[in-house]
Amino acid sequence: MLGIMMKEVKFLTEKSQDKEKNLSFKEQILKDLAGEKEEQTPSSTSQSEVDAASAKETAAAEDFEARPASVDVSYKVAENEKAHPQVYGRVDEEDKKPNEVLSRANRANNTVKKKRQNTLARRIMTTVLLIVLLGLVVTGVVGYAYVSSALKPVDANATEYVTVEVPEGSSSKQIGEILEKKGLIKNAQVFSLYSKIKSFNNYQSGYYNLQKSMDLDTIARQLQEGGTDTPQPPVVGKVTIPEGYTLEQIAEAVTVNAAATSKKTSKTPFSKDDFLAKVQDEAFISKMAAKYPQLLGTLPSKDSGVKYRLEGYLFPATYNYGEDADLESLIDQMLGAMNTNLSSYYSTIEAKNLTVNEVLTLASLVEKEGSTDQDRKDIASVFYNRLNQVMPLQSNIAILYAQGKLGKKTTLKEDAEIDTNIDSPFNVYKKEGLMPGPVDSPSLSALEATINPSKTDYLYFVANVETGAVYFANTYEEHAKNVEEHVNSKLTQSSSSSN
Figure 1 (spheres, rainbow, N blue to C red):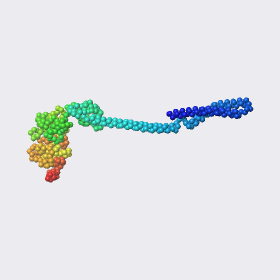
Figure 2: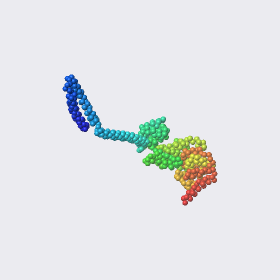
Figure 3: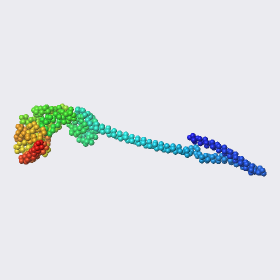
Figure 4: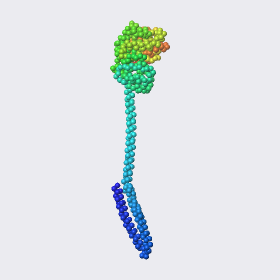
């Protein structure tokens, strides 16, 4: 800026000097013109010529007055423009250099600025994407945790029962709302979605006793088993009686809560001794006989030689018990279950001139001798064929029961060496016909095989107690061959390997 101002001062100074030169030049021209006049005008010139010359000089002077300044200035300006073009706002070569540097700097600044802006934009976009992704992850984690929590029990330590009614025709959504309202689940919507995913679409109406310590899956499955028509006392445990259990084994089983979720609840309020005392209580037996006359009408007498009159009459299954349950009600359930399972066969049993006690007694042997439905039907046919020919049944199962060993693991050697001379009404090697009563609680499969046996001519069979395989024969010779091949040879091999 200072350089430009200095140039302007220089220009004005030079212009002033040029003006002074112009004036001097003007004066010189006037003098020259005057000289010419004097040289050109002779002494003999007339007055008119003098006047004309004077007028001409005056016109020339006037013309000069107007012209030289303009020409002079124009000339000087042109000269100045050549030397210093564009005084005001012009950019000479020296001025251009800083401007070019400034321009390049500006462009560089703009480039840096754009890069910064692009970098900032990318950072903002990356941050936004990270926030969105983080939000999705957090939402997923929180959602998963929420659903996982909703599947768990409301209160894992709860022991009380809550009675729930499921109206007929209720949807999974409606059932979920009922359960949530009762405080049994955490979220009705999760219940509905879980039911859909698991294809739980067979919920049954009725009354249910549920616990807050049950997880969602347990509740959903229980609701598919069917409720009761009227509210029932809450269930606090279960007793499971396996098929083929003797009454003494059942006495042990009733002390174990099959539905226990912890060691604290693993035991029932029942004891083995109390159970055995109750099944021998004659007053109780009479009460049950009056309640189930078809089932207990041919019950063996006390002096028939049986250990327990109710042996074989308690149906093997799983039974619930409530807070106020007692042994009498539990045994009543077992007798009622056997009565229910035989109810459709009572007429068939009678038509075959059999008694319920005979069917149960024979079925208790079939239960232990065979493991498949077909084997059981064939074994039942052997027993019927032998009874019809007045042949002893010769079942080791009855001997083991008499010895108190039934239900315990028996080796092939122990089975082959069984004492067939034992003095017992259950020794069916010595006596003809059936034992006085059953030796265990037969399954429905054994009962059906006994009521509807196969039609065969088999009189013999031998079972491998270790593998469960059964070999049948029509004659004793065939039977002896089976015994030698499938029992004695195995014993010999076992004896050789042990030595």
